[in-house]
Length: 195
Image (cartoon, rainbow, N blue to C red; front, top):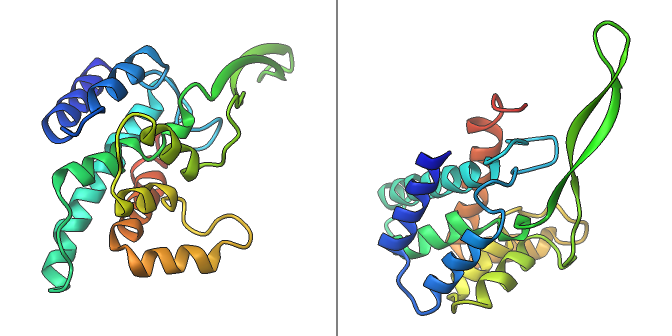
């Protein structure tokens, strides 16, 4: 996990240089960002899962942006800073979100045993993508395209938002590519890494 943390910090410091970025990194280091799971029981529901997922999304997003320039002459390659911001920070909403709780289950011998599991303990119920935008914006200014990409990285999964997500994807290609990168990381890169 230390290697992943080092990789995250290297990418962050080498690519994100805007005012306030250093304060956001300090906040991340004081939080559970580097040890938190990515989910309660789905993808990377393990210690350090959020860190690993964030790096996976950033890597996927950089690749998708490069590939898009080959097929779409009108596509403008986002800066490495924007790619790092959208990939590394899209799930800030999960910082300090998960807690561990003990539950009971029957083991293979039919005896009851306790086991740890992750639960939500949301102290700031502000949505998902919008909460990540809110947190990042408290430290540094995001471009509109970055804010849209982070806000819509989950796509149109909430009721009544299909039309809005589609418009955001049409207007801001980085938003669509961030969504695709998040889905690829979750369902391809991380599907075999459940605990």
